[in-house]
Every structure is written in structure tokens, then in C-alpha cells.
Image 1 (cartoon, helix red, strand yellow):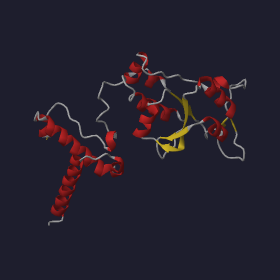
Image 2 (tube, one colour):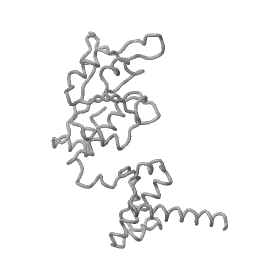
Image 3 (cartoon, one colour):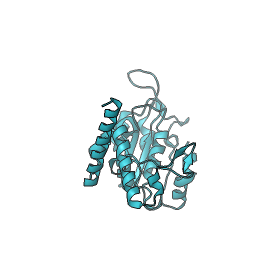
Image 4 (cartoon, one colour):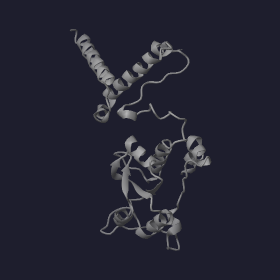
Length: 239
């Protein structure tokens, strides 16, 4: 499942250049069962199968070091975001445990796992897709993976969603690129982008603003947007 992600595009280049190392460990290789079994029926009854303690613990022990952090991809974990991605990018070694079936024996979580991470309030058939998202989002934050400065103005940087982006042609199906982007005035472009970032964040994810670091200019931009919203509401109501 991981080959497509690890053998293409930016992550592949990072691995080939030795910036990022990704080691895939098959838990079945650590089963003592002749059929390489790694699961069993749950105590207390219920549907599905539970992944067993021993093969998981042996697999983790085969790669764990003193600096490792073991993370279990689980819908019960803390919800993943860019701040957590930055937290993980600062680590030297992360072990990601991918659950399957109905999950893993709780004793593995209690004894081996340092952190539980969820991609959101939904359930996947296994932790592999969630693990890929973590690997991708963390790897791109490591210096040298992306061109310098490429991450600086992305969504969630500084607590804001990213401003709209445009490229050629300047007019598409009668819709023009905002003139300010063609003006060549870098200060006007910078402020327009900042204002648009606030506008989109206030509309779609106002919760992010609680953690945003606001400058005096940002407060002025928010005031302008609120005034514009009031004027729009008044026009709509015929005032």
C-alpha cells in the first residue's frame, strides 16, 4: 500500500536524497504462529478480530531506540493538525503503528504507545492511509525536502488558511485574475493576500483565529472585513 506514496514525487526524492528514511515493518514477520497469525477473537465476545500483543511488541522492539516515539493511528487519539505535524517533524525517529480489524490489544497501547493520533471523526479499515498522511505531512516540513520558504505561507501557517492562488491565463471563461496580482506592487499584493487569508479563515474556520498571532495590521484587516460584512448585510436588507 505504501509503495505508490514512497516511490513518487517529493517524498521519493527526499528518501533518495537521504533526507528522510522510511522503514516498512511487517508485523506478521514477528508472529510465532506457523501461519503468521497476528490476531484473535476478543475476550467478552463481539464481532471482528483484535491484533495480538506479542507480534506487535516484537515488531516495535526491532526498531525502537531511546529517541523513538511510538504513535498509534486511532480514531480515539488526539485530532491531527499542522501543529502536531510540526511537533513530529522536530523528532529524530517516529514509529507508526497501524491497527487493523477491530484494533489492537489495549495492553500494547498501555505498554508500547507514546501517542495516539486520529485524522478526524471517521473510521478507516486500517491505519495505513492515516500513517501515509502523517508521513507525508511531517516529511515535507523537514529542511531540504521542499525548496526554502515553500512552507511559509501555506494553510495553517500562523493560524490562517491560505489565500487564493492564480496562474495563466489572466482571463478564463470571462473571469479575470484580481488586478492587484498583476500590478507589480509587491506591498499591495502582500496585503491583499493577507486580507484574503483572514477573509477565508473567518468564513470557513473562525476557530483557527483563537491561536493566530495578530499584528496591528492584522487587527486593521479584521476591522476592514467586519465593516465590509456590515455594509454587505445592510445592502442585502435594503438599508
